[in-house]
View 1: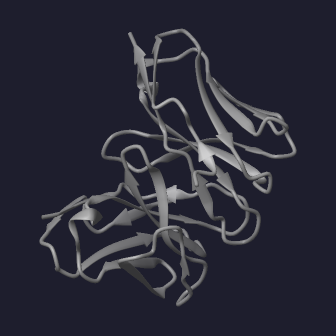
View 2: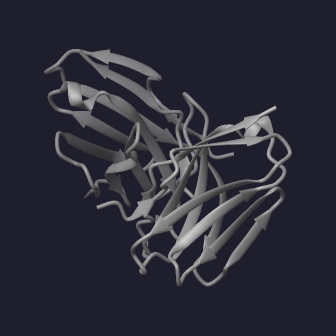
View 3: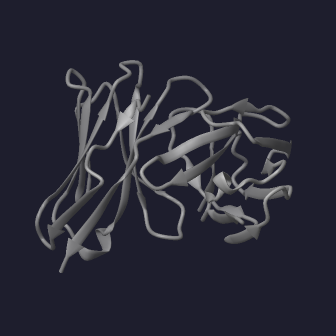
Length: 112
Length: 113
């Protein structure tokens, strides 16, 4: 079974802090994604990566950056957390082609 | 602009009856559609998919129908079970190697025993 793990299930940070969210997948997938899920808005794509050291902006990249130094690991960085970044963050991975994405359990981030 | 729309935020169905979840899209370039199920405090899990060259795909109790002319797809669950209670997201895929999915806003299905 594909496994996608995220470093924390729940996280509370203060406004202005730098926040790192880590995601690791164990299936040698090329593509990895970061989403945020908010009520009434569904899942919105923040950033994605289709190869090591490659990254592409998604629909809502403002206030975020990413890092992919190894194929299995994709990090989301909030440079200076703000209260409007309080959300559920979901990481996903998939191999090439029209195949379904596999999601991690999510990180519930609260910024106070 | 929401390219994938789920206009019903919630749906309540009796156990054993049919659940029909609907999804509309605006971009005719989408070539693959997927449904995901999400329980609270868990990540979404893949349920069923359909290519744009088909109009129906079935997997056990789950069937997805695609009407390309209407840019509409629906997920049928028959018979519905209490364990099906979850948020259901439809998603559309742009062609190409990056597998970028566009998700709808989700429909909360409640199956009453």
